[in-house]
Image 1 (cartoon, helix red, strand yellow):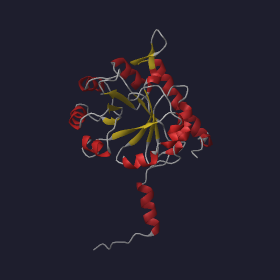
Image 2: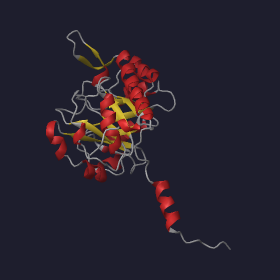
Image 3: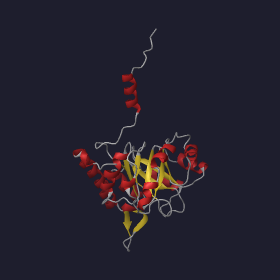
Image 4: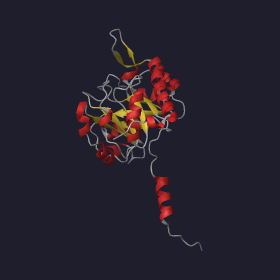
Length: 266
């Protein structure tokens, strides 16, 4: 008969390290999501550029909205290991479940007023991975948002997505003050809100040290320009997508070479 061996302090500590999430470091690749896709060519452009995930907005009032059927049609173009993400805003639980079942391997993103219980109910008690958006106030108000408690409340989420609190829900092209976020959050983080090829490197430097890992999520920052010079919501620019991905990869390479360039999160 095998005799059970009582865990020592050393084995207990080793077990804790084994099961603890990996803290952010300069050698971790930043994951990339391109959101608000409505056309086949934009899905293809995101994949060709090297995106890890693509987002479909299933919120009818949004100018980037698609139906669940259209999202499923577009998602069928995705190769293996590129994740479709379905964005919902205060959608009834049965609708979330029905739409999710149409797209194999989809992650759900909750962007409204959904409670932790709502998120769990709509994802089979967390069986389907989900992201929970935190709407961070613009200006100095960002310092008043209790992100630590928010991450604790939504501890079943795969990650907390950080977006600027703008009128409507997401895609407003506004960035909040990244430096006002708490220095340490017990969650994987996804930085969103006003990201562009020009500022995403600074966002990575500011936010990566604050969570277990960092991904970035862009929508308006890679949209095609209309005749008036303003972005056309829902239509992406393949060149801008390529520039955004290149800027993220350049930031990762820079940090791998010079880890001290991570900005202090204090």
